[in-house]
Image 1 (tube, rainbow, N blue to C red):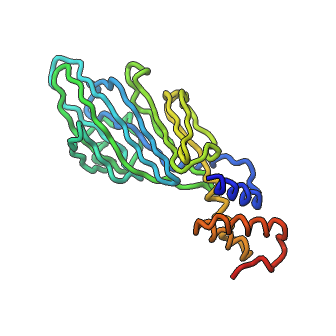
Image 2 (spheres, helix red, strand yellow; image 1 turned 135 degrees about the vertical axis):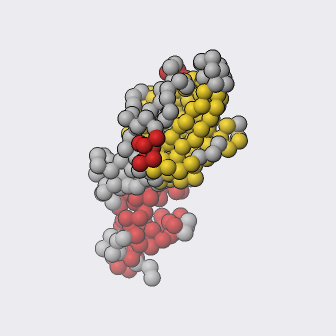
Image 3 (cartoon, rainbow, N blue to C red; image 1 turned 45 degrees about the vertical axis):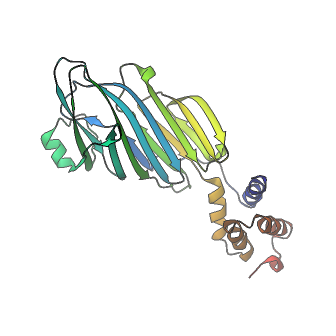
Length: 269
């Protein structure tokens, strides 16, 4: 681990990275809670949101306790925006709940839609709750984000369902294969705990606002990839050796290049 970190510092020393902020017009992944489509008789007693970020891959998992506080049986129909969403799984106690793909026209025609975001692709599911019954459901899916013109990735989680007791709403974010310095900003999250374990950074806390947004840049990958596009054979070979996990060779070649950046004799065919 120490060898790898030393290499990163050497490579970053070869490059010039200004302080960056994400482009405001490119927000990457945007995820939502579900929306109630056929009425508002059901309460959300609590929710726990888990967001896992691994480079450009986003995994969302949400646990929601739905509560019927009336004296009658209620059918709840809920919809989930599906733009840029893959591998959707909805379960209750590990039992799958059927999800049906819909388009925006169908949603607007059949349900109350004034409060909904303008999303083209949707998924709908239905669930019956007995009088005074609580049911725990889990919604899980995958998505991807893209980096902007400055190499910065972003994700947004829209906090569109708020339980009556805000204490019962928590969010947990895991940045896999990340160092803390890869994370630029996390907005609208009141962080209660932050931990770093090998190549993972963990945040957990409460949602402080309508949406949580995270900006991050993969400095290590950005540095290596930038070397790959160089016209210098030496810099390209530094990148190749690093990707081949020849860390000792990478360090030696970095040292040679730093000492003699214009010496073509350090180029390796």
